[in-house]
Image (cartoon, rainbow, N blue to C red):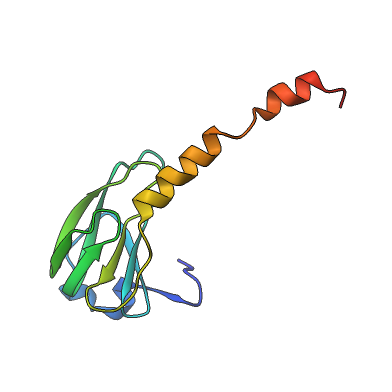
Length: 120
């Protein structure tokens, strides 16, 4: 699987004999950001392996001690992202950003009705 120059599949960093079987694919971006890759439709729960250390879920702010496997709820807007605790990486408040984006989107004009009322 092609992940890009910045990301490395976690399986390439941690020996496969030490990884539990999980459904999901996880990618490390540097040593401190771990992202779950959801590539199937209708996935609403994602099993993710967290390597050794303390990892913070950027959506819930919950900290989990690794190595362990976690099941994460994944509604359509949520990509599983964990940051290594103490790393100094701050991705902001993703819940707040999501809700602000929904509010902005709800205040935009209905383009379909604009097109119907214009002579385009």
